[in-house]
Length: 298
Image (tube, rainbow, N blue to C red):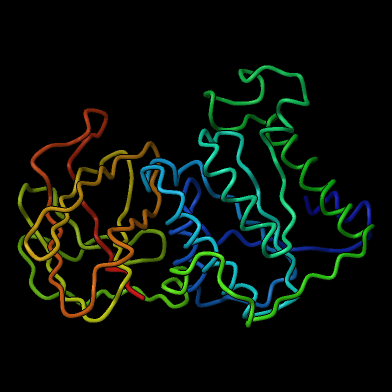
């Protein structure tokens, strides 16, 4: 992309990847808000949806809340930042596609529809993807062409992106995603130990069933946890006030951060969170390791 911009406009550009590859809108939200080197960006690409379908169990309302909260945070930093949303080729749910378009239109954000770009290329999915989902080299070239064409169109049309903070919310509960922090202080610990540094973060580790870490959360509506995914990773059971509310499989074919949304509305007051190594694991995983960095709250 930088090369295309240089060739067309003679301008130098630098790009920074903030969100985790294969991540979710929730992960992008916490990565952006906790990025210690955040800047006033001229252009931001938001490419979410495919992983959110699985993580959020096709709840497009929560997806919309997170997406709107992230957009308003970006615009709050610099009102005339150009944002481009990307509709991923692997999104299956029309509801998610419609939510992306709805939020984009509401905030006068242009978007790239790579599903349409793939169809218009008249090439098979086996050519455009490596596995039916992830783009191949040819697929990525179509992504780049589609994104560059939109950038050029925006420039030719002399777009002047802006933002008025008084603009009403599209999703009334998106204000839950205005602030964020990751808490690493735990309440009690059973079996986990401080041993691993990965993705510039320190993780507590255990692979023994029923080992646990507990946390206490006060007056936060949003609750999540930052884990490490990878080929040696097991499964965690997550308890809220001693009730099992979620089981999450940390297995992944590659090492990557996993910001997992537990609840977008846990209620007022003080809550106890217990994260425990499950007694089962993914058959593909080489071990049952669970790596915990901390809790996500707002």
